[in-house]
Image (cartoon, rainbow, N blue to C red; front, side, top):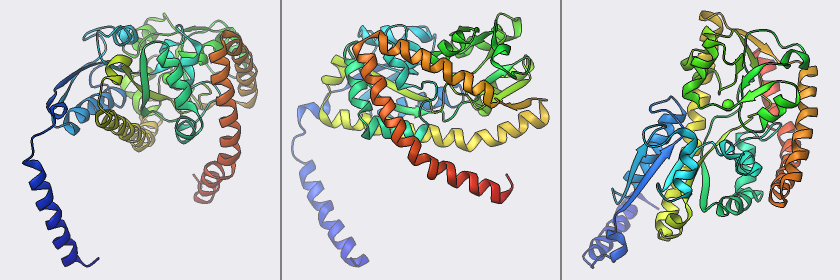
Length: 364
Ligand code: CA
């Protein structure tokens, strides 16, 4: 189409829109909706907190102010781990969280953040959107009166901060480590004592010696937390969170009461944030890692194969417990396993093979 024709046809469209706008608006379009959104992240926390705040703002903007999103960071309305009950009960309409925090309510929740030896960012998106993951998430969340969807991802997480070298699984015995989700259960099988505490309280526990080790996210977030002041050994790659997905959880009755248009808009906003958060983590992690190693005396270490094999053995035992938990947990695990097999075979000769060859040739 030539530019002049485009302008002409756009002009016709403009007239049509103007004519339509003189018609009375349907009542539903004028209904203002309040959406109270609670969160498991501290206010303005880089990446996690700022992403949640950006999503809340975007929903208000996309609806031209018709859906008024009122965002409360952790502790501003309820504590981080009370977000689930606040939304399930209908006291609030939405939460932003890592759903593995709810594994005490049902082990299936862990799969919708990350599980040991689980899926990377691109892989978990594939499972959720085209591998049956969303349907299972709907079944699980529906049982608690919730509707959940992807709303962010941190990518591959680091293995954590330790105050000594970890050369074998024996070195993990007796360690008190902050590590949530099924990753914590893996550490317990190896003789460590996992604890799950909200992000805002990790630093004080590490400095006081209440815990010996912690994982959090990756270089960009971990530098902000100043964990290097209390532990110098920084291990990679984390087996426990290879692509942690953030969840927008909505009260089920609130969700089903929305128009199809509003549902589609919220899904679009969350889907965009899923991508935005991952982009930001990727953009900022490399510089932060270099700074930690060069300027903060951080000793970067890779978990050796022996340690990784111990992680694998322990996670198989943890997964046995998931299968035994309930028929739904077993169904979620089976779906995850099928997608992981397909995705692993493909990523081996696509992302993994390409990045290995590129970095080798570049000498990275
Ligand atoms: Ca983590």
